[in-house]
Image (cartoon, rainbow, N blue to C red; front, top):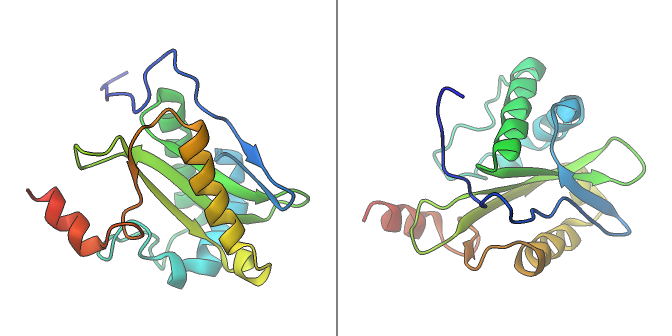
Length: 167
């Protein structure tokens, strides 16, 4: 490898691989999900543009399927390296993606990890947003080997997040 990064979760510690409900499954995002992910992102772009902060450029309006495929390959590699973990929230019966979940190193020392997620317009139409949100929070709290996580922009305002990061 040309560079090394610290593992978010150390080798030898089990990483939860999936959680399933009656409505959806949360499983690792893979490059083979590129088309379904791209469709969900572009359909929901206006609602998810602030997922990583008010000034974050993702997802750009001109995102292409090929650029998305590259992003997913990178996320898949991060997962393999244990640097960070990206999961797809998928319909059980179709190739429809309902959203994504990102578990990343925190930029604040007081937290083990920062958790970000977005849900698609399709999930809103199916009226499962609250179910997805509750499942994510319960899964992280109950199954992940992380003692203290933060949901930036949700549990802590973006302004407070940025203020704390700059200290």
